[in-house]
Length: 231
Image (spheres, rainbow, N blue to C red):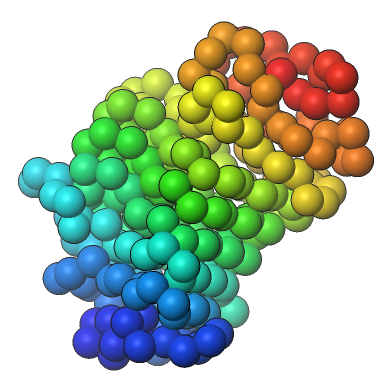
């Protein structure tokens, strides 16, 4: 239940595992406290913040990952497993100041008044599975607003997110990019927007060049391969 999940997040020692045994509707944002590492297995279940309507709030996220803490998401059950229903000023699904590993599960149906409908990141994210879709931010980063570091490989799906009604999936502020740490799977789908018209989108392209065909622009702009990276 909610109290057990909150307790696990706040008191997790090094790599503490928690397996959901049923759907949860939250009344508070779950905070992974500094120095803690929570491995959360969604197990085909849904964590719903229940804030799809009304007004955004600072604590309207589903998860807040504090500095020097880690949230690791996986899903050993049906593909229904996910986190949804957050509505925050920043980071409707997850507000991340620490580290996130996404191995599975869905981050969907979350909203941000400003940035980061799915995830607002000023820490580090590593994604090798799962999906981030159907999230919305009123300013930028319907799926992910990336002000930190973002690593991808494997079956990464970040698509179908919006800024209002416009496509807006991963938003990269000036000087930020996606670091490729391995080959993207054939079913991977990554859509990107950048602050500037011409901007570096990836690092590591020269090691995994054929993966970049799976990285596409949100708008009608051409991503050009140049000097071993994608622009």
